[in-house]
Structures are given as C-alpha cells and as structure tokens.
Image 1: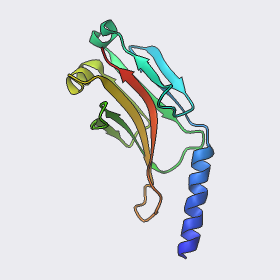
Image 2: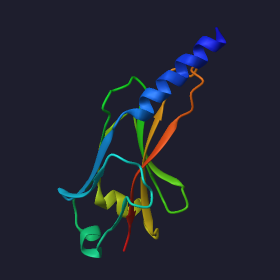
Image 3: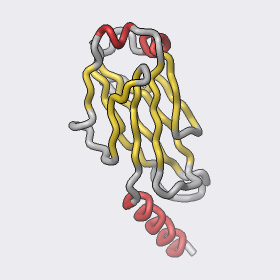
Image 4: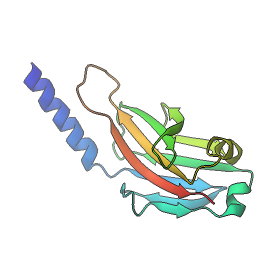
Length: 138
C-alpha cells in the first residue's frame, strides 16, 4: 500500500512539474513581469520611487495549465526570506501599494512566491515554492 501511494505521489509531482504554468505581476494596471519559468535571477524588476509612492494596486495572478486540487497561496517575503504577507487559498491577489509600503517599510526587496501544497495532509508530497518575482524597492 505504501509503495502504491509513493508511486501515485511521484506521478502527480511529475505531472505538476512538467505543466507549463504561467504568471504575471501588474503594478498600477501596468505589466511588470510575466513568465512561465521560475528563474530567480531573471525575474527581477526595479520599481521607481514615483511608482512605489503612487496609490494603486499590485496584482499577482498564477495560472496552471492543468488545474489541481492542491492548496495555493501567494506569499510576499523580504530580502531575508521572512514572509511578511500571505494570501492563502488563491491563485491571484490584489494588494494596495499603501499596504505594501507599510508592510515593507525599510526593506529593499519584495519577493513573491506561489506555494502549492497537497490538500490532504496524509499525502507525503512536499509543498512546492515557486519564485515568481523579485521587486527591488527604491
């Protein structure tokens, strides 16, 4: 029984990894970043002071090619990796820049991740953390 569960978990993970998921990050209705690959070195965007001080929203959306029943959450972390803002049970979110400025006051970066975890705690599969973007703050 354990072998069957392990094999099924590996198959599910292989299908999830091979799917071409896509995502986009929008600031003040202006596309900042979009992509299909989670490359932490490429997915970096410098935010200008004028854009950071504007009132508006930062929108993050993640789309799976093959939707799964796993739990999704969008997480915002600082440059040290400390998660300062978490949006659970969602593949898209809209956060006001006012709230972001308060939360990330004194920080140099906002790192945005998608975390995908099994909905059943009995499944022995690890959660996946996908880097979507790093926003360098003024």
